[in-house]
Image: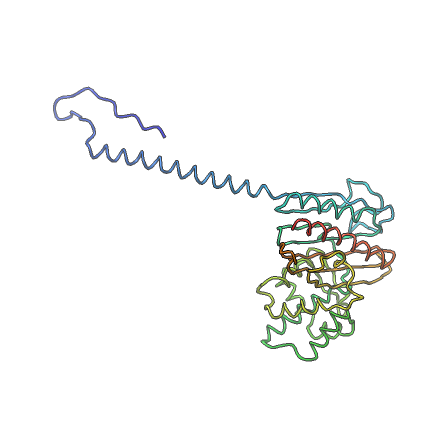
Length: 346
């Protein structure tokens, strides 16, 4: 910073109004002011440099979107996008955000490619804590839940028990085990009524699952869900939080890891061998939108070669499938792409 000009010499005057040069004390004060201004300039430059560095760091994260071409017979409707055709201007997009820009691009491209031309409507949500990655395809579109809502029922049961400062009863444990590992509908109906819709809503509010609407009466399978909300639930179960105690989360994850072998299709397809899989699937056929086929999965654990730990979740919801098998195939196509790309990124 340039120093201020020194006071200009003035014509000397005689008598009582004569003025002299500033005193030594005054000159010291002026010097202090100048030094102070210089210090502020340096500090401001340092803050600007820090802000620039922060902006540069943020700019390394990338968001990439890829359109998904739908089949001629898509089975869609106005709620999910115009049915039929593959007009890219109307196509839904797989949008991925990641600290690793190349990974965001690969996932967006590969998920879209996996679902290219599929008959039906799919929604995808995924997160990967290791790479700071998330992806979304129709994440806020609503679907009938079918049996994936059973994870929500379990969470609601555990939270209600915590609120009452008690453990699950032997009956509740037996029903919860059957509901998750065997997808037993009678056990689910029993727990749905024991928990009560009000407590289910309470759990949903605590979990931030604002887009989920419980089915009326005893119709738990017609709960309306979104892929984004299901991803929130997986995140809740796999990290410390204030909604469920760690013991409750561990109990839920243990059950999800013990799902019977014939129900372990869907999102686990293509998962690395060392990953610990926690999965729940759902399937339901109705007169409108054909088969609903869904899969939610969380994957944890460490690589045998010492690579980055797995800590991610995949949600794929589908409807408009002519057969259950077609829905399963769509889910597994997307899941394999995700597992492969995340494994390569580690």
